[in-house]
Length: 156
Image (tube, rainbow, N blue to C red):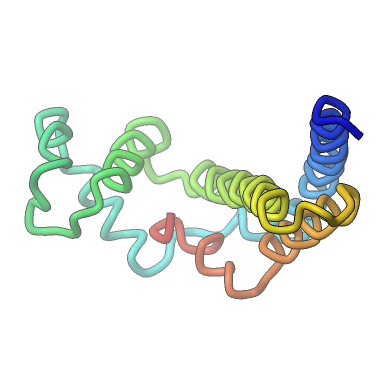
């Protein structure tokens, strides 16, 4: 098999399993995390929301250079700054975004594991690499250690 055919085979299996992963993640996410969408805020969520409420557009520019007496997590501060502006204290959108980000991360786990398998296991079949990557992404998505990332919006 020449490189052109091999590249087509790689992309075919990767896309086939990626589509299957997306089709599986949506109902699985609704089944596993649907009840969390109605949860209210907990623990550190209130701290992030309080800072987001009191920050102004002038503070926004300082996120990258100053911790402002709080955690130095500039992108998290930007995330809460905008989420607060759009959704205030409605927890539902925060949880929807958290579950969606978790699903996107599972897709990225699939892509990363498939790419690494392409590099390190060149002689294995493309089907096996894609299947292993698919299972890795599902395990990442459903593993109980991920519950904090889903339940607490502050873990974003």
